[in-house]
Structures are given as structure tokens and as C-alpha cells.
Image (cartoon, rainbow, N blue to C red; front, side, top):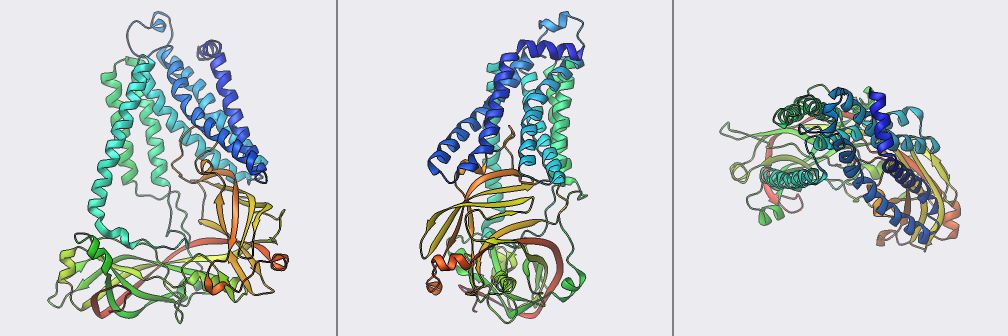
Length: 559
């Protein structure tokens, strides 16, 4: 019966399905071919414009395709055609689900997998990304099918979708207002550093939520097809979705964590200490936002950090015990910051990279000095109560290893292939004594299911003969590449997925202190393209105890 129903729908919608397949294949072909034209910016821009147009079409068409096919044999009303025939409701639902899954989920995922094979992405990673894509697209399809099943006509489906968008926008506005009210001024704690990576990442809650939403959509569809009563199916689907959200928030077991433990010797030697006995609160935030939470900072330094390793610090808990015995606890944890290494005031990344490259000079967009660390978050009223007292803070010292992943001559045609990260320089787009840009193709492959530890990649132009290194900036040549992918769902960025994009790789020397570095032809002949892998290898707990901490308001940390 199911095979017969699928065949019937294939015959009824053959032209619509054929047009959809052609559209998806054309879109995938453009995504694959366009990066090959980075050397021809006119052609590249034309192709990216076509990708942008097809992106919107490919993401809008399923909102027509799915309800048209589902509502051809509507699951609402008592006068539909299929009720007068011996067609089991579940067989009809299965036929619709199989056909739409093949068209909307499997076809784009297959094209993405073919692109990964052509890009030489490791087989294990390609499988993980394919599962990622299939799961996210299935969630999207389950939601759209559920909306189609409880509406009899396309105009009603469109009205339901519009209402859902308005409700979502209102919910985002309300939640944003609540979050801002709760967080107050704590955004002042954000670190300006780009590395090391976050303390840990775990996609288990996202996985539980996606699986729960698939179950919720399936529950609504099963009840609606079996009973054809929205008073039963909508509560069943809504309750299942609410349960999925609650379960995802409560889920206590990390199954997809990417955290890793640093080597015992590295973890044991890494230490954290306070440079001064001051807990200072920046003045600008108190002036601009008098009712905002106050973020007090400590001047810390790291010690015992092995060469080619970097350390970042985040406060997890803290308290100040006042002279009368009153305990003031921090209102929230802190963000990652990069304190200097003992004996210097530099960011640890700068020290580690110079050692890694064996050079004296490093040109980098990273701030030259290490960061102060958030040590306490209090309300304005609590801040007024603070006096010189005993401070106790619990911190996480995140350790990340830097290593050279690949070295190539700095010239067109140079290519690094690390499987999950690839970079191929195509041609020189601009060259002056202070600035050098290459057009290149960058490939990335990451998944929600990656076992970890988490990795990131940066590129450098290293001239060992002159003992100089310049950090490169890799930027997309077209903004559409930031969100255009093979699948028909709009990814929330969970896991990253697969991407192959045209990029510009820039090496620039704009600082006055580095004005003596000249990127001439001789410099380029001596230089190498070096790809550095940063691996986050977990954190170790450290405590800071200050018997008598000075409380002050300061602009630069000097009380």
C-alpha cells in the first residue's frame, strides 16, 4: 500500500518534484564551483549573486512543496477523498513522510556528502556531518509537515506560518528584555581575545532538543492522521514539544562533550596568582549605567605555563567576607580572559607564538598586553557595602596547545590540506610594502558529533631569515557564504558543518611600532605560510585567596 501511494504521488507531482531536484542540484553545483573563480572577481561576484538568489528560492520552495503534497490528501475534515477508500491513515502518513524526506532531506544531504568526498574530507568526519545535516533537516521537515497536516489549504498554512513568525519575534523581544534586565551591566566582562577556545562545548542538550522536536512533530502527525481532530493532535504535539524543551534544559549527562584533560605534567605546573591585592571596578560602566551590575576585576598572572601553550582564565565563583562576618557572593561567573605570563605584561598568545616560530617580532591584531580578569560581579547596593576584606575566588585555568600544522612557501599555489581544515592560495590580489592579500579557497568540516578536543586554525606569514611573523586574517569574499549551505534548513551553527568558500587572506603591517617591516618581493621569497592549530585541552581549577583585598573604583586598575 505504501509503495502504491508513493508511486501515485510521484506521478501526480512529477513535474514539481523534478523542478525541485533540478533546483537543488543547480544550487549545489554553484556552491561547489564558485570558489574556483576567486581569481576572477567579476565572475565570482556574479556567481555569488546567483547563489544568493537560489538560496532564497531553495529555502522558500519547500514551504510550498511540503503543504501541496501533504494537503493533496488532507488530514483535516471529513469529506477528503482518501477516506472513501480502504487506505490506512498510517500508510498514507508513511508514504508522504518517505517521499518528502527523500526530496527535502536526503537529496541535499547526498549532494553535500558528494562535495565532501570531492574535497577529501576524512570519511569519519563526512559521516558525522551527514548525520548532523540529516538530523537538522528532519527537525525542519517535521515542523513544516505538522503545520501542513493541521491546515486544509495553503492560505491557512501561510497564515499559520505568519502567526508563528510574529509569535517568535514577540517571544525573542520579551526574552531579550528579561535577559538584559537580569544581566544588567555584566556584558562589560566580555574578553576581547579571540583565543584560546571556550572552556568546553557540549552538544548533548542540542541533540536532545532536536530529537525531542522530531518526536513532537511525529506525535502530532500520528494523532492527526488517525483521529483527524486538531483538538487532540495540537495539544499532543505542543505537550511533546514543551517536554522536549524541558528535557533538553534538564539533561544532566554530557554525551557529546569536546573537553579534554591536559597532560598531567602540564596541568600540575600551571599556576595562577594575583599581581596586586586590589579588586577594582571600572568607572565608565558606573557612570553610563548606574543601576547595572558592577564587574570587579583582578590583576592576575599565570606561571608555570609550558612553551607553546597558552592559558586563559575564567572566574567560576567568588566571595568577599566583610569584617562583620557578612559574606557577599558573586552574582555570576566571569568570561574568559588572557592574563599575562609571570614576568611580562604581554598576552600569553604572543609569547607562545614567538617561541613556536623562533622569531623576535610578531605582528598580530591581538592586544599587546594581557587582560585583567573578572573576579566579582555585584549589584550597586552590594558594591556600596564592600570594604577591604578577605577575598576567595575559584577560577578555571583553560590550557590550550599551539602547534604548527603545516608549512608551505608563501606564494600562489601553496596549499594546506589538514582534512577538516584546508586552505589553498590562488593568486595575489593586492601587494604593497605594508599589505599583502591572497585570494584563496578555504574548506572547513566540523560536526556536532566530533569527539574533540575542540580545534581552531590560524595562518601566519613567517620570515625566519628576518625573525618576523605576521598573523593573517581570513575573511569571506562574499557575505552570502556565511550562511549559504547545501541543506534546505537554516542552520543555527550547531557543530559548524561543511563549507567551502572563497576567502581573502590578508597580511598587514599598520602599527607604527612595526613600520620597519617591509613586505617587498625579497620578503615574500623568504617567507612561509604557516598554519597553526590551537587545541583546547581542558581546564584545571585554581583558587585565589587575598586576606585583605583593596576595593576601589579605577579606570586602569591602579587603585
